[in-house]
Amino acid sequence: MKLNGKKALITGGNSGIGLATAKLFVDEGAEVIITGRSQETLDEAVKLLGPKAHAFRADVTDSAARKEAIRQAAEKVGKLDIVFANAGIPGNTPAGSTSEELFRQIIDINLTAVFFTVEDALPYLNDGGSVILNGSVIGTLGQPGYAAYAATKAGVRALARSLAADLSPRGIRVNVVAPGATKTPIWSRSGSRDAEAVSGLEQKLSQLIPLGRMGEAIEIAKAVLFLASDDSSYVQGVELFVDGGLTGTPFGGAALRG
Ligand SMILES: NC(=O)c1ccc[n+]([C@@H]2O[C@H](COP(=O)([O-])OP(=O)(O)OC[C@H]3O[C@@H](n4cnc5c(N)ncnc54)[C@H](OP(=O)(O)O)[C@@H]3O)[C@@H](O)[C@H]2O)c1
Image (cartoon, rainbow, N blue to C red; front, side):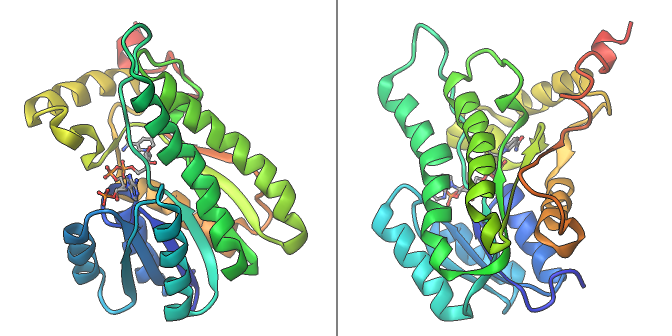
């Protein structure tokens, strides 16, 4: 097992990529702390993950709640070895019709809170630990209507590089996993799309992705496991794309293959 005896904190561990990663980490021998805002899905996740998982409800943008959840996590399991700052939201912010409130909310959750999750965890993080930030292909690709989200994910890449420099003296590695389109509840959050719209979008995206399909949450989780474990002991400050080839070969999808 790759994470035997390790202690991991996963923000947004009650859904999608965070939950798949929590499950994989537990299967690999880790004890896992998950956080999220929904008590209902936190409870469901703990039931699914079993006794080696613990949940603390905290909005990542609520400074006091975030600090308290991390303090309680360390009190429960001892010092941490892995932090996966994964919690994030999508959000449509097209030029010409975007409220400042929504723009700020996306920056707050996807960027500012990522930095402060790491900041608050640092006193409880063992030297030699691993920090993984969840980025996105959108931080590199210019997608219409996604300026705020794109800025946060490009920002996460920049954060990781600076944090890697700051924390290298402690042997702490900081890397980014950058998923492409991955099948999780994010696509229908807040009733933004019904099942038919999600399926239509999946078909369209699959035409653009060289490997011809969207990713599964477990495929992202496996990359996070690599970055969390000693298998990546000499990997520092990278952005690992897990996107079916979309960023590496953007003209490689069926739609453009001719
Ligand atoms: N799925 C994709 O195609 C894709 C692609 C690239 C990057 N990503 C990134 O992957 C990460 C996880 O997304 P996902 O696809 O797994 O989506 P998801 O299923 O919607 O999960 C999002 C998670 O973030 C948590 N979260 C959101 N806002 C929060 C807040 N203010 N405080 C605490 N927790 C909060 C949610 O918890 P609650 O439900 O309790 O609020 C949930 O656990 C995000 O950072 C996203 O940007 C996803």
